[in-house]
Length: 365
Ligand SMILES: C[S@@+](CC[C@H](N)C(=O)[O-])C[C@H]1O[C@@H](n2cnc3c(N)ncnc32)[C@H](O)[C@@H]1O
Image (tube, rainbow, N blue to C red):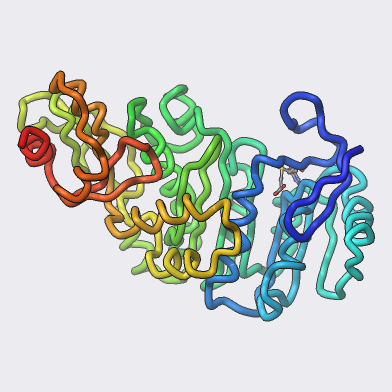
């Protein structure tokens, strides 16, 4: 048993010699600290107050324990922690004692199947779905229980299923076609966003992404939920195909998946997927200003820069250089020259409204 410290919380956990895994008595993944840091920063940066929070797949409960200690006092009216592991409530009680936290009266411990726990509740202003693999089994209940203006946080670690390794799995589980090339992480993220939005639309809930990213081995999206048929219709209009030309590296979006590029090559397609914004720029700016976690600063800076050109797709300077059989331009001066911004999806990626033809002209200058 080792004592682990994660910011304000200590846990005693048996960590396996190899990778963390679902068989652990109490699940804790040290690689997900950034995921938890960002959830705390995001909640503290939103204007939402007096929230009922749900952590239905809590593992060791680390996220919720940190919420208790690190969210500003006006955020929580109720905090519900659930996991279906045996002895879960006892584990959390022990951690409260270890951390000298007197069990608050607004903290509720549950030990059930996650969807059952959500379905039996009246609704939540924040729900964090953090499963092993796909969030699919928990989406209907989570989407049904998220309140007006509520925040739904989704993690997916089944990245291979979304990035073109198993195209039939993407179709079956995410109702879309994936694409395996340098764009696969952005496209996988957007396929997942649409899948979650389709669940919401059934209940007239429009789920708008306010922060969306790919990091390490997972996707993470925060949605804000609003009610309304018109809002849902507006979201669906932004579900389109991504069209990519492997010949000239041009890309675009369309409601059709069979189109031909200007260079006469037939486009490859991915989708349908979300073609709208990935982030709320104001929120990221506030998060950047408020950030108490120095280890997340670089990533937040990158997201903030990306949010200034929050558009579909990006170009990869190394891919372009390979096509042209030249050395790639140095990225920093080239970003200024275009102009363009970095993207968190790739260190060689650039987001710009310019066309591939314009980019090649600039490279040749
Ligand atoms: C990836 S871990 C959660 C990690 C945790 N949220 C954190 O930040 O450290 C997934 C957890 O979900 C629990 N779990 C898996 N399927 C479940 C289900 N159907 N109902 C309730 N809990 C479930 C597992 O026991 C495991 O602890």
